Length: 431
Ligand SMILES: [Zn+2]
Image 1 (cartoon, rainbow, N blue to C red):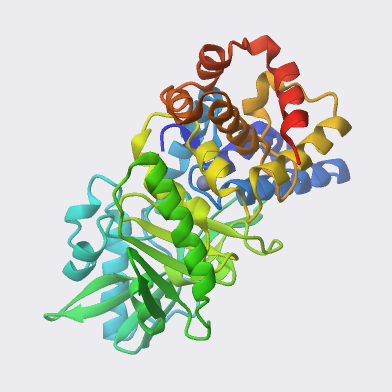
Image 2: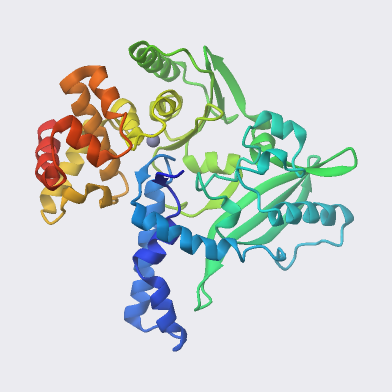
């Protein structure tokens, strides 16, 4: 996405913390000293936190043009060198004729540099997958909505195994630094099956969800693990929230596929991400929505993850707005808590940190693992607009593509007054 960063974070933290320059310095000495080791550790932890923080919602955080430009410069470095040959991890057997054919298929696909523009005509995918999924490859932009997953790291094929008529391929995408430390971005899972004598690719979602349960209520189709007992009361709350939203905004009902599980990691496994950077931290409700296919993937809130459904209904009304995440927080809260819960936590944090200058609030990314200060402030802006002028004022606020301009025009607050304004409003509107 052009306006939002959700996982170009690698390039963010690499650049932000100066690690390239740092690794350059270390290269000549081979072994980092203790201070430098701590610095690497800090870079990694911040990088991971940043990712965890952003990843749950594809429209989580806006990034400044300054950083975005620099990300893509760095990104290009990997993109242009990523695919010569796709290495096989030791132990993967390609003497088997069938496995070798699948290895060739997957390798050719990666070498073709799949992206949003060429994926629809990709000869490597089964026709049924192309019909089922407009984006064809469910993992192509599973980590970053603009950058193909396969361009974000160097691939190594780890595993190819025949089962239930498919051959599963697991691939590690990662990178190493000049100290030869290896870092993993993700481990993907994709399947291949023979059709008319030729192997074609299938999404993990297709194969892994074959034994999931399906429950259809109105326009919602719930998909959930076999072991889950469907909670109709929770689903009814979600449907009631959707009905209120539709009534208020005068919107038609949209058919939505709603995949949910107890944890977001289960959802990631379902989609074919056996590992993605950021996994392994404490579980918290997380979700992602795909507006093109009206699909929600949600973990941790069962049948009632309204935030992601709000994205499905309202994002398309404001394609240029920088505040769509705030709109979803305003209506649907975040990680299972409403806006006021997050405002209270943010207020406490700001009181403890008088040095934070909210004149530059768009650079205030991280507070802790639960409250996203940026999306909370966005949610506050939507709340204030609605409180002051109802739906018309909220729509007006959402019509801008620049948040600073929107605040000045709609609230009469200039950039150098934002710190005072936000601190006052956060305190006034908390629980
Ligand atoms: Zn969101």
